[in-house]
Image (cartoon, rainbow, N blue to C red; front, side):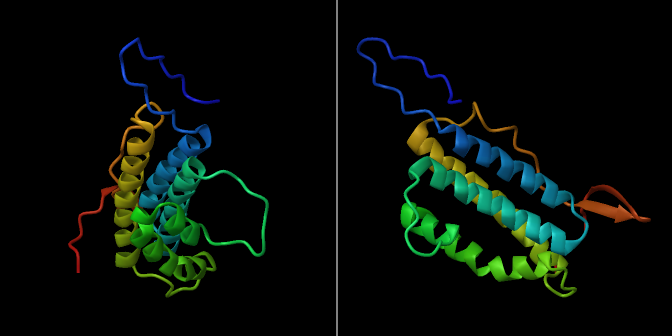
Length: 173
């Protein structure tokens, strides 16, 4: 179900098209995934969940800018497609593609797959990527404020005595 758009009055410029519903849903899933990642205490889970949030944001751009086509040959990575469909996001696509193997290792439970800092840095980077994606989509489709939830802060809970107590306050190394 798409967003309702008002019809411009005579003499007014036409409104930009509404953001496709699939793209809006994927942006919402990306935000929820990032919020979930920020709350994960295990750095492997935090890294993997944040990376999946970035993947959903990339999928939102693909949903907004492409149309499905019949499968030809082998499947292509969303990161490769993102670089082709949205060249302005090419550096982000390269960055996240480089982290895919690390995400797979983290999902597999490898004990030294990622460090605390790598996980925290990825959560921060995915938050920045989401903001860039929203700006790209807002440029093409007008404001996405009708579909995006309020922006939470993505701070990892601090653990004291085995329980999470709030934003992390430890210094960066």
